Length: 127
Image 1: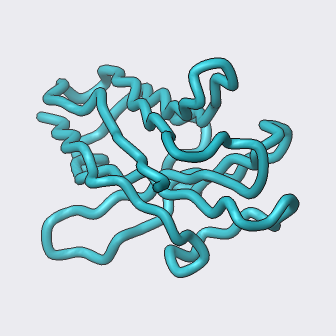
Image 2: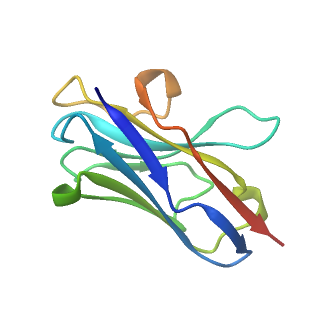
């Protein structure tokens, strides 16, 4: 059974940094893609960043490009999101997602293309 478990959320001041982790179990990240989405209160879930299983291809939302970095650690079967220069608008529940059923995929920003989801971790940025 595939499970995704996020960690690393918390409260941080504007301009600060956090690193989120997403641990994958039940499958190794050796095909497909993984991604981060976020959902603020009263808003739709939105795409943040995605990473191919090879680690070669990445995709970012315009609002986080240059501030956030997505990466992976093969040995730990874990994906990360390094978030720098955080802003109050980054406040949201951050979700890890994965699509693992195809060897090669085009990185997409649609939540409907990912079929495994974690429970989320809260990130709050104070001004």
